[in-house]
Length: 274
Image (cartoon, rainbow, N blue to C red; front, side, top):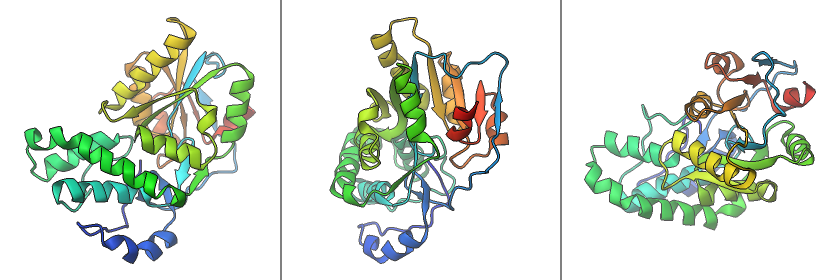
């Protein structure tokens, strides 16, 4: 997920039509947050820890936003606004709220706490918020405009040819994550997914993805995380597995390297070139 929000939506959602032209003029980089276009260096940039083999895993957990694709629409963003407005009567404001590498439920948690809503009031209504969000994304799924990150189709085909098990581990709620992957033609490339929803923290999402992978490939299966944020790296390490960081989201190569991933590449084309 990204920040730098440029789109405003009225508390009752009526601002959506008014802002359509603005959204179209402001390409989105990750998730549902307005940001500048991603700039990918033509130079191949790869760093890895000694003896790390990126093809050695039995299964791979891919983040979605900023890793597999970057959204050029505001469907998820507006669904988030509509859900908060409909359930709580609030106008979403994310200034100071951590969104990079966060989950949908984690963002809701932080926002509602900052808005002064008592936890015993908002937590029981989270399923209602997520249902509204899911319905809104499904209703507007024809407007999803995902842009695949460089070399993603080639990487997925390489891993599938090698017999690897592929899953997604995303901060999106499940229906939203799968909708984005359907829109870019990747849904059938992944055997399973771990998402936000009942799970709030990214560590929990990764843990569930590992559990699913090992239920298929065995308890000793080696699992790698592929992601574009420090949170992906931290959560992989918190669960005792390796992280491959890709600088195709909002974080630069050097910043990702500062979190000690087992491997870091500027984009997946560089990964395939190693």
